[in-house]
Image (tube, rainbow, N blue to C red):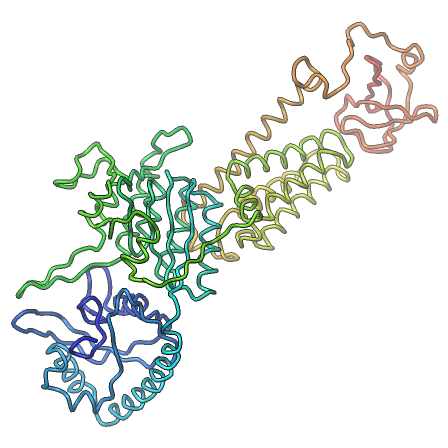
Length: 582
């Protein structure tokens, strides 16, 4: 316990309310309360503001009060010790070198500004309630003091993709349900998908539990973004972090708009850890815990940082360099060393996330390349169904691909019911076009548009019709996945249509005959010039009735409705060709 008997945070007061540049005082208060006591839902009421000056420091002090009845979970890495005191206890011990001068000044200033008798009674009542809570908290914790600390470990030793995102999200949820004291990410990756990394860093930043990372070897590109989001970064000797330039599948740098977005994301992630307030004599300075400029230099080779990086080079840190520049909080050779040496958990229980085969399957199905492939099958099935009426293999393939496309997105909460409904309405309109309405008109076009909209919206993390939290990168990624699937799907179907039955790999897909030397049946040749009536819709193939006999035929007048009079115009290659009788 510290000599001043007040809750301390690494030697500083628990809630340093100095307004960091870019962070309001209340934001600073809420951040400190969340990080050090795990208090998130409370309403602060400002009661005083003053400037405190002593022989060793000068600072702006803002005092708040609140009544909180929830559970407080002190972070033992942030707080050395603490206790509650009544108003009478504090008042009777002022000036006895029990409290620090700055605390006594804050208490007196707050009393002078707003602590009238009524407020004092109110606060005394709140303190009694707090004391009752403290007694309960101490009783419960004394019974479990001998219990081990629970550390939850999540291994991410692969490319950052949807599977990694699922691992982290499920791991954090399981750790919270188990009441873990800390989460440790065991990381080794060369990078991966930017949208998956963005979702992962957001989950880390807003986690109610402290999340640490142990970089076993590499934290490149998307791995660097995830690491910077963690509360503390620990690295093995010989490890590296950085090189976060956005590249395409071939390794070439993407256009500047993508780099700009990545720069801002890296900068914002570094800024989320706030600043340290450094007071030296009468001078007060602010120092970023993680310099945002350094984070940007990991993306943009045009950024120059004196004594660190010149223009034309993308920044990558070794372990020692990362320690020097504030991007590594300690060197360790194992996860156990991180826990015992830095987290100070000598006696701990380690639980690790174990992914199921369903997690791996969902991650595979949510891979953008595979999603584009599924879209290609959906479009291909619809295309071939339009060419050959009836329910067959193309319909079954398209339906199965749609299920594989939407199922994992629905389970992960990305695809909402109404988005799937939009897609299904599109399919119904296409089916209506195939089986009911001849030709390809407004119904078919509307169905196609709805299918594209449904496929795209399912990839976007919107909340019903609210798209405010959806960034342009996520929308762009969804559109690209769908467009690639559509383009490749149409191209492949057109190519397959021309190649089936030809020489090569697809030679055996269809029956092949040398139709150039084939001769027409004399009986069928006699049908030329005869009149009949369509027994089915010709799209352009179908059936006609001539002299009460059904014949397969092909229309040379486009789509022809059922029950229309036609005439046979020619007979070639064992096929009857008809036209509408005028």
